[in-house]
Length: 480
Ligand code: TXE
Image (tube, rainbow, N blue to C red; front, side, top):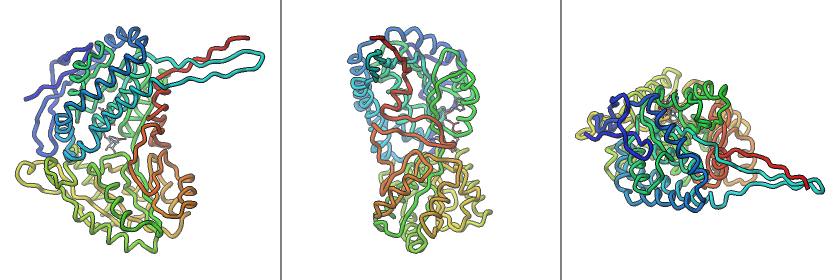
């Protein structure tokens, strides 16, 4: 069985404890590799290596940093098949999704920030007759990057790439549930010639490794993506230590469909927006609000399409939904379907786990589930399920749609479907979310700010936002 190792000071290393956690393939329920069960001792080694590497790395010419990040991107691309297979095996997502989305986006994360550092500018403010202020944007030092299991290498690289580009050294922790592609990344970094200690990857549990990173006095900034409860815990630890924090947390995103939408195209895209990656994307739309005049027509067309989705072996081409990431998460999703029934919801399709045969007979699969008849205030409609479960709710008019959409503690993303341009702008302005897609979903422009409001987090990733997060502004005034 393959054993994953930490990547510390440029080398692969066993955890100090010598113990490992089973890494399970969710499609089969079988252990396929072992993940280090690291602890604060490994974090300390990683920190020491990062601290030592920092003076040189932060003074490395931008062009050299750029070349190294480009080489990492090339290295992932060269091993595309391996990354795709590992991402799918670790997470349960269809192989074709990992090939179309996760791995290409990880490659472009490195390329984007490699190029961005060449163009990152800082401001100057002239005070006529008095002097000039200019702002230095300097790297922070050693920073921590902690990422989740739903888009493993894609989100991991989205943090690491801007942190390294801006001259920081990194102690990073991928999710213990999906560690494999981060392990492949450490091999790619070694091949690319990334100097020792610049990036360190410590595998293990959130409560041990994650907590140790957050608590470490020398780690000055934390970029985290994961659950809202974990985010709260991290903030409670890091805020009194005055660490810089970027928290990308959960979502319960509204999809608002007006009667004047392009009906067929909308139905098709909403199926994708609801069930991609088994609904395990923080940006998936899980509360679908439909204008009353087309509610029945939409419901029937939507459910007919959802019923055609195939839950299957992630390795098969015709599979639309693969496995749920873990047994615990599958049980959590099923418990919410149970709750929806108790709350008076009517299951229009799905509603239980999917039983597969052969290789996947012990895997964790859930049918895509559509529920109607629930009050927008009930728990099913207010709490993050993070699986292939959506609710349908009719609305009378724009005001009601907005009221229901905003009636929630989360505010990550949203989508609005209409051909009325004025209404699209109006609704986009009033919706309480960090991202609004109009007649589209999951379109990514790496230059734009990404993140949520309310319980969906603080801070932004993407583009210049991430470059600003990973640098400290220092104003210098020169008297004229
Ligand atoms: O995530 P965790 P979990 C949501 C989703 C899911 C719920 C819980 O609703 O059901 O969160 O998922 C590390 N200090 N999202 O429990 O625990 C952990 O090891 C520092 C939304 O699996 O938040 C992992 O690397 N780190 C989300 C990372 O945090 C800690 C994606 C995320 O795991 C830690 C995933 C601690 N005390 C789940 N405890 C999104 N926004 O995309 C854990 N970790």
